[in-house]
Amino acid sequence: MSLASRILGRLWKLPAVVHRNIASEPLRVPMRDEVELLADRYYPRNAVPAPTVLIRSCYGRSAFKLFATFFAERGLQVVIQSCRGTFGSQGIFRPFFDELNDGEDTVTWIERQPWFSGKLAMWGISYLGNTAWAVAGSQAASKVNALGLHVTLTNFRDRTYAFDGFTLMSCAEWTATMVNILRTGGASPIRSMLGRRKMNALSARAMAAFPLRKADRVLAPEGVSWWQDWMDHAEPGDPWWSAIDYGAAAVTMPPSVMVGGWYDIFLPFQLRDFIAAQNAGRDVRITIGPWTHVALPGLTESLRQSITLFQEQFGIASTPAVPQPRVRLFLMGANEWREYSCWPPPNSAPRTLHLQPSGSMSADAAAVESESAFDYDPAHPTPSFHGAVLEARKGSGDMADLERRSDVLVFSTEPLAQGLDVIGPVSAVIFLHSNTQHTDLYLCLCDVTSEGRSTNVCDGYRRLRPDGSAVHDARKVAIECWPTAYRFQLGHRVRVIVASGAHPRYSRNPGSGEPLGDTTTMVVAHQQILHGPAYPSAITLAVEPGERR
Image (cartoon, rainbow, N blue to C red; front, side, top):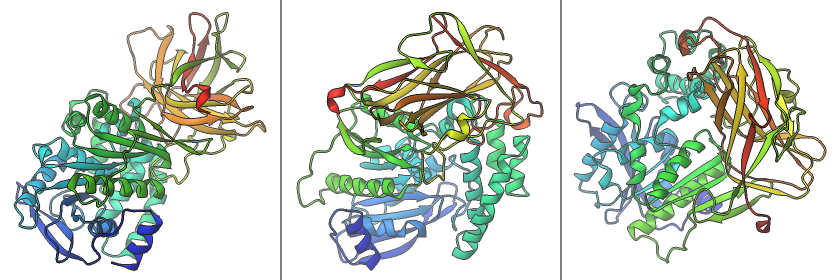
């Protein structure tokens, strides 16, 4: 047992150590096409074969050595495997598209090993979690007895084109990370760190590239194959993505724990997976904290819950498990945890706030038809501020600079006469007139203090394409926002910002209808948000009754 694992195990409140003497060995795992993938096994020395936890990583094995030690010290053995084409594993790295077959082959190989006890779990964060979903959607699904899934989802297309728009910032930053990994192989930590610094600067340049098809050349002179794939398969319904949609696995998944964050890039899609499992009666729990994608507290929560689940499933725990809630949520603004039997919370009720032409918001729609107008110029796109992005350490911040722009609209309630707990889905319906059918709508829900400081709570986005209506007809646009759990305090105001862009979080919409990667023409969008009895533009919040406060 290392000093680091002892100190961090206590600091992170992990379950008690069962074994202190941990050994390791390298492995070579053959795939069906004769490619070999490298792996390392960590196991309690001088003990009977322990249940196995499989972790499949495109970010290397050494980065997860400490996590493997945590699992092994608590009565589990761990196989950490490098995905195809990464960190010494043979083959070519194709994001997402080899994980089902390779994961299935790895499970089959593990079953044949003399050290395999017949009990298997998988754990993973982000891409690693998706490799676990891939196995859960494969012919090897029945061999997996438990899952620990942290900030991940079943279908990466959902995130690549979130709500039909290309998530430029996250895709560019992740591509820069993987280009650096594939170049350096992680062999030299210093070289890898310096390369990462350089790639961060290049990813910012890539986000500004126009047309977008050329952005990968900024990151790698030879280009990046998967970037070109993303440009070629951007339209909704493209069957190219079907092979990596593991959504069906949610209705058959084994006992599982999920951990997410209110400012995580995957949260809406992770909750879709949870709801599918919940509705199918699966044994699944979820915890959502005030975290971003890369937040350490969220990761430690996942480790703690996953170890506990695996010990329960495999009979390692020495004391009976304490019953855990199906849904555990951190209520931001109140800084307290809440427990529920399901998602969405059963007691939350919808409350609709209508956008008014005066810039106010109220329970009733405007009495007469009117509009609020702004122009969106894709040559000078409305910037993104805070929110759910890949590498952010903080999800929320001051929105004053965005609210001062001429290409946004701001709507606010009167100061609240009592606190408001918004816990659950957030959505909006906006009635829009635009001179182009190719445009975007972006909404941001904000909390405004009594001193006037506005900070973002959650947001939503929708890319619009022709839907059969004439250009000058009103379009009824449904927008799904990030879900949230947030207390608006007494005297605060609820605010909604409306825009037609959030660049580079989402790629700019040029308005011309040209393909994502090949756009060269930009059209200024003249936007009119409509109000009135026939056009009741509004946002709907899930509000919990006041007695819970």
